[in-house]
Amino acid sequence: MIFKELLIFVTITTAVTCARRTFRGDQVLTLFPTTDDHVTLIQGFGDEETLVDFWSPGYASAVKRGIEVDVRVPSVHLNYFKGLVNQYGMEYKVKISDVQRLIDGQHKTQAKALSSGFSSIVDYDYNVYHQLEEINDWTVGIANAYGGIVRRSILGQSTEGRDIPMLTVETDPSNPALFLDCGFHAREWISPAFCQCFTKNLLENYGQDPYFTNLLDQLTFYIVPVVNVDGYKYSWETDRMWRKTRSYYAGDRCIGTDPNRNCDALWSGPGSSNISCAATYYGPYVESEPEVKALANFIRGNIGKIMTYVTVHSYGQMIIYPYSYTTALAEDDATLNQYATKSAEAIESVSGTKYIYGAGATLLYEAAGGSDDFAYDAGVPISYTYELRDTGKYGFILPDNQIEGTCVETTAGMKVFADAALEMRYNN
Ligand code: 0X9
Ligand code: ZN
Image (cartoon, rainbow, N blue to C red):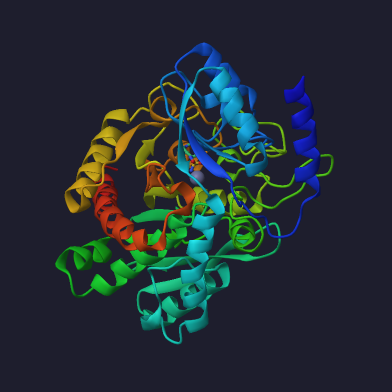
């Protein structure tokens, strides 16, 4: 009864807040559900972020016995929440004791990066998180600096009318390609940071390092640093914890569709929600999100050329391959597993960072409408989702001093997928 009233209260208060959201005193707790009652309790919190925000796994119904569950609990509900958890005899530990303090720490280095700006592309600081406008300027700067092999184009426009820039790194138009995208989910800031620094690694090494020179001579890269441009901007300016797009559909209660539930891959199936307020809302119809539509159209238009698709998320240190919309194995399960194994090994050999890997529905959870499954079913033979660092110590608020390490190890992992693209070319 009290629980129900609290939910109503929270729903109303969250609906009327609008200025920059703060997370003062919010904690991220790791819960250890060991009984069915524990699972029922956690799942009862629902997917609407009324009482808790699911960080890992990404939504309530994916919670099972024996897994660790990371949730952000707003400060106002902490006592109530912990009391409930204690009452059920469930173990928990505090992972982040004040979410806002972590965010503030990040803003200090960001302010420094912004005030210094960058006058030339050689000054660009890859070791801080950048705002959307800076990333846009960076795409222009990169295309100018490496005009011979880089082309900047616009993949499409977002709901709010922003351009979605894409970089094509190509030495020969007849080459096969690897498509890499970042920034599907707004709050996963390490993702766009990785796409930028990976691009830099490719370009700076071309003509210098024999591996990259040989690679770029044979393989085209399509790189989209931020797919969900509206959401990313919103996560900087208004709500650091924003995940979804910024679209609104008449009759819905909330703004935002999960772009990784909106793709044509058993759309509206398991692990996705028809409730607009849910973190995993699949949207009013398949590819309703212009960002998703633009990406899907590009992939469909380049089947036969794109040999590998990689989409970069955080967090969890995982390499996920199809399928997530079903527990059935993909036809190329053995091949997908083999490259994932090699990619994880490459990452670990560079930095010791451990990645786990597997088909999405078994490794993580069932979740329909994802871009990895879409690309695979559309005819891209190799398709992966990276969940970058970490495993929850900082979660989505990964400090910027980890960007470089993440970039170095993930670049090593990406080499395996690039090699895979070339091997596919010979097989197809
Ligand atoms: O749930 C997701 O969309 C991804 N995890 S995240 O925490 N970054 O939100 C995992 C995506 C795995 N692939 C599919 N579900 N298709
Ligand atoms: Zn994500």
